[in-house]
Length: 99
Length: 325
Image 1: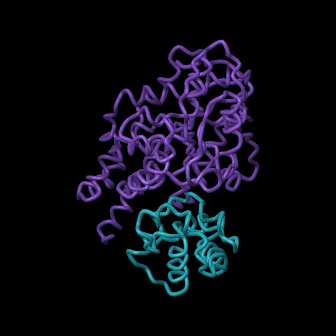
Image 2: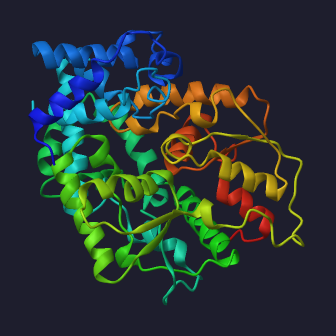
Image 3: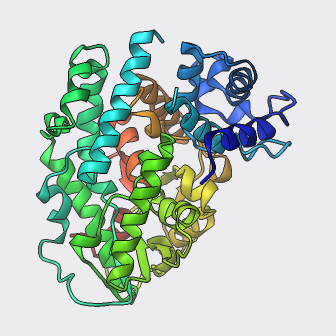
């Protein structure tokens, strides 16, 4: 099993492919019920993950965003860049578990 | 979300994690709830496939009880005390007062699946000692160390008694055993078949005339539709049975989650998603909703407010074959 630093590197490599096109958002149930507040959508989650992994910014918003993800994979199948969004979010929880 | 809620989230995860690791299920499950579906069935002996419920359907009444209490407990200091006490005593027993009708309904669904398999000529057997929770929440919460140990134990127990094929009855257990466990266990060789892959796609008991004019709407479970690519199989079975169905907005690969996966951490948020999905299902004008997952069953049923509008795929088929227990 990979160590946490390996996992962080793998996640960052994947999420940095995001060009913020928003193709992932229309299928996301959590952004849908939260009036398009982007922290509840895949694109917002990716942005928060990048901010944490690059700058170490930890916030209540980050926790709320990551743990309201359903891991339903709807976004993963829409991403034109092929980012495994749901799996990145799930694995990112491993990192938060150690914080 | 306040820091208080962040702390609550950690405490709920700790309680669930401790229960799975120490007691084998995320929440307390009585012996009757776990095994009551067997009553009157001859399930012993040997066979080609081990019938593996993964205990998910049995847990649905307890999940519903827990979620309604968690909504209140979420803002309470009791959660802080409870998460510490839970190492010594199972505090999820607080949620063990469940609706008996819901438990019997879960039993009926499992029996329906068992009988559908038997009547399809599938050589199955059951062993209660081997039928355990697959650890889905350890996976979902990212508790990788715990999951790797847990998955190893589950697999070795099956391997030791020579189980090489299992039939699963829900998408989450299927996904865990088929897709997740192999990532943690080097020599993993268990063959995993969801029951929808094995049952006959036609009604062999055509003398049973239970056909109605009801029109159903299908709610695809995320893990069958996306992770396991099964959405064609259960539609073909419905067609084979002559059951009329319509599609909602967001179907098949683009299905809309019921909200169930976050019911333990964010029960109100989860309920809002279920209500939104229910709106989409209702707008089709269908008489009833077909679900194929115990989490969807529990979450949508709670949103609908009554049991009869949300039905499991297996109980609909059983009503056509006469296998309803």
